[in-house]
Length: 610
Image 1 (tube, rainbow, N blue to C red):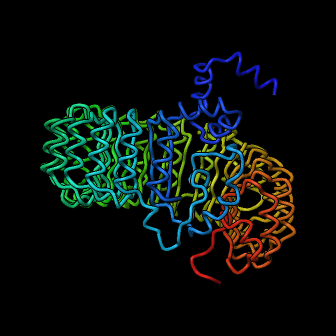
Image 2 (image 1 turned 60 degrees about the vertical axis):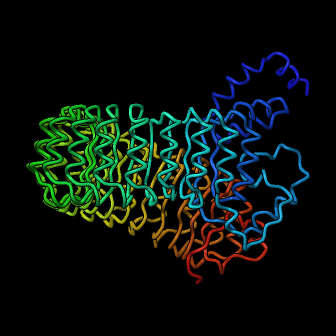
Image 3 (image 1 turned 90 degrees about the vertical axis):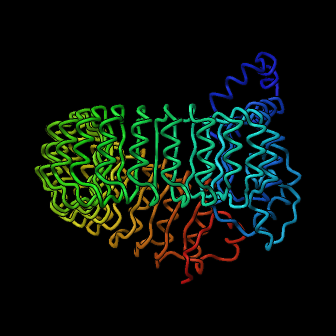
């Protein structure tokens, strides 16, 4: 094409590379860039920085091909938690496309492995081994970030090859890998790590982590240790001594005691984020954090049964810069501890209270009075919190944008109306199983919160069509979940379809009074829809699905199990009408053999056959 030649004549490679880097955050855009011509494909191969892989092919062979093809890789993410598809189904389509032009090329295994014969019994080949890791080491000299999630066949030998060849490595995630101490020691010898995640690394002991912190502790800024049975306070003592610049620490361990955390608080005074799930930590350790970590901005405490308001009061007294607080299943925390945080940490922007049954209305009221910068509030399983708490939030926290209420049985329409009238910048509202909330509260949200884009009302029995009519008129929704709201009918969903044209995700499952009329309106009014959940809707049929896919051609995911009026014909209609479909969840017995052959890659079934 003359236009293409003119562009390539005028644009030098470095300018093309700049354009490519602008697209680097989107894999689909990078792939499209590479399909323009051979020159642009060459730019893609030279300047692509990131690849992400799952269990989608012979791992070692795939990785070897990738590192030869993309010479400038800096970020490699390999996640083997994804299920392996049957080998024959995966690779037989490749042989039929093997003669196509390279325009079909992406960095996915389906496009890189061609004419490959693999038996279904050879599933171990889908797991990365030290051979593949060595290929990454020798082919990605400028590697900076490496994530190896559940790569259970790797050993210290492969990790040593990474350490010896990738001297610029800054971030390493070994979640679920059975790496031994020697691999971690090698990383410490050769690399100046900044981020390290050791979640579920059962082969590690204090020996490996102590050696690493002694050699590269000065550069380490983020450390995660979770369910590592042999990591104890000995490692934390080394962290305290050598990691003075540590900013983020996440601990999930039964082996960590007060002594280890106290030493970390004393030695890592630049700590900004601390997440703890340690059953042996008590008030004494939290008092040390409050005394020495004045820069702390985020604190998350999970399943704490051995500390009280005394520890939380120390945080409120010493951590004046605290911006995020999560309290999950902290049984002995009450309003007194929360009041101390409210009065001592006025910069708080995010608060989550989950299952802390001794926190009542007064504690949340003090947050509303003392924390005017609050933007996110989550009250989960808090049956003792009443409307007056939300009233104080609406008066004092005018910048609130995100509210999440789950199983708050004493909050009703009055509380929600207070939020709607006082927090008009609300963008996200999630309410689940709050049975006292009905149409009046949601109508007030529709009238007052004109920036709301994400609304979830799961199993709020009191919400009906009038509420959705108000939302459709007043809110530019992109995400809506009304699963289990039994009073909603075609009228309410029609109002949403006509008023929310930018809707992207919709969950209307378990709506017994919803029929094909609603799907037809969605097809007309919501062309941007990408995800829809229709499960347990007994009145929806093939006719409604045909109208839906006629207008919602961008649909990528659809769930429709336990829809008795939907047949194999309706399933075929969805598949043929949505070329971009990635996942369709249905009952296996409803799928015809022809549909299975056409769309085996997007079909998902229930765990049990019906």
